Amino acid sequence: MLVELGDLQGDCHTHSEWSDGSKPIDAWAAAARRRGYAYQVLTDHSQNLTIANGLTPARVEEQRRIIAELNEGYAWEEEEGSGPAGGHAAGFRLLHGCEMEIRTDGRLDYDDALLARFDVVIASLHVGRRQPRAQLMARYETALRNPHVDIIAHPSGRKIGIRDDLDLDWDAFYRMAAETGTLLEINGSDERLDLDDRRIRDALDAGCRFVVDSDAHYMSEWDNVVWGIGLARRGWLEKRHVANTLPRDEFLALIAEKPYRAS
Ligand SMILES: [Zn+2]
Ligand SMILES: [Zn+2]
View 1 (cartoon, rainbow, N blue to C red):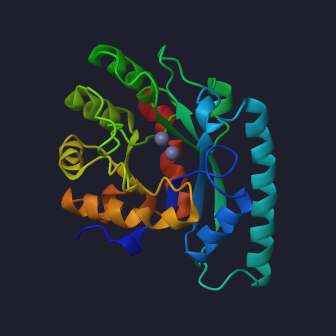
View 2 (tube, rainbow, N blue to C red):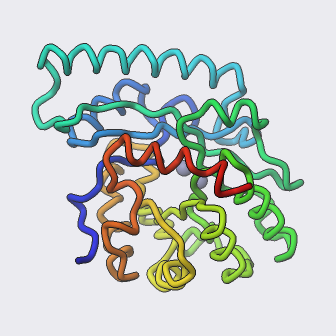
């Protein structure tokens, strides 16, 4: 059976006002809880993406404290049964992630010690998009082989009608993702729709696993996952191929395998 919208247990790609999103962290988490999610990964941009107000390591630490405090509050509410109506039976936790820039020089935007402290790391590239194929592939390879990078966001980098796809060796990319256990994102944003349906099918054949995300910057964009699920179905994905259909503990256990897969 093909994956369905109702199978999603969480969203792995969301932005708050700390980078280029629109609302405070707690407003996002409250909305995710009301949607019935068991988790939301907060993934504000990293320091080098200054146009998106990327976070310095000091701001990452500050976020970590806020998230821990919010989660304590949710646990307390769940215990006394005062959580929001329509909340997930297993409760809700806000997970600390980042959308880490793969820099033009091929280096990652945070060091390994910092990356290791996030619950979930998604990597992407927004700058230096016109580099030659070999250089782009080398940048992606660094991210794929890093033990702490769990997901590659919007892999082709296209913006429909605005930016073309990155010039990649797609077969090599899928092979490395499968080999290292790095999840590939199906980004449901209507300006991205990335991976597209044909690439999803090719990646599936290469043995990849996926996540379906909203990449929401505004509250109205949570529903972007509808388009992502549509793409996933056109790519013949079943629930078992999409990692964020897993319960929270199983999702985190899968993420925790990455260091063993990548080495
Ligand atoms: Zn992005
Ligand atoms: Zn994003």
